[in-house]
Length: 364
Ligand code: F6R
Image (cartoon, rainbow, N blue to C red; front, top):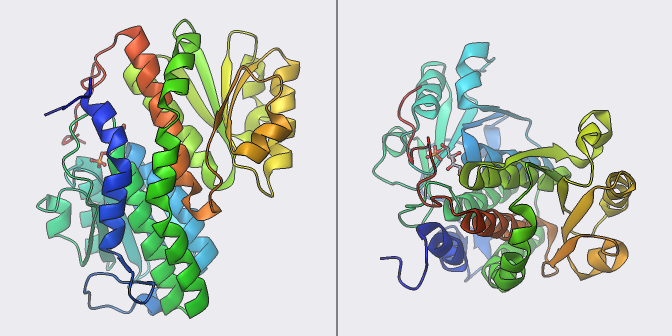
């Protein structure tokens, strides 16, 4: 079932161009270059507030989507991990939209949060990979990802498919709210349709990333930095590395470094910087300088322009294709997944079944 792959996780990483294309094809109409959602019977344009709840990697997909919902639809977003959400007695206005993101559709905390929202007058939208799951059954708006079965415990293809659906939903909501013109909608759809090819290009760096994995095998800690919509990818990169290689890793918003974690930096701590070139890049470069000035070793994941500007003096660089910012989080997910994967392989851990973890967490 693994075909030519050594692990399910590796197979699932490489399936991403195909499954993201599959997922997008059910949300984007090529004929008129528009977004199309499944049927539902509430008015998306009337939604004034969005609450997003999920766990783990699915929560990080939600963090990326928060940027999109706010940027495109100008709708305020409240987001929390499911295990915290219910216990803070969240303020839920009647008729608000609550969005749950889950690969399995069975995660106990997320399901309990969904039921809490339902009891409190929220409309329930669910982005889920298992269409027969509990969450799918309880949704008012069911938005399936078409990633196919995910067997590796570490979530990979479900994440990028969640991002694809969430981008389509954010764009559609923006259209309904009159925040995106028809022309802008076309642009968004066009960029989303470019994602599968860009994911393929990112996967071409597999060998380079495998070659740098031994640099990490002896380290105790790794920091991941990103900002804006790439900050959640720093969190995701750190989570992937922790869970399968057992190396301690933390994700930080680049600008937060100097508020504490910079004290950790010495020449034993690699710092992975996730930074496509763009308006915020200058700032990220100065954060990198702060790291380097303290002997920190930077691994820069950027595009050609970013690497040209800031690649010198890095321990290593990973060059991503030049992509529109909207699809950057999908594309930059690939190198952080591959890095975690190859480090785990070098360390000889059980990649598909890491210790202490279960694929579906059905206890609260
Ligand atoms: C990380 C991972 C977990 C899950 C989390 C939520 O690689 O797989 O963090 O993302 O347990 O699971 P779902 O998405 O099934 O609700």
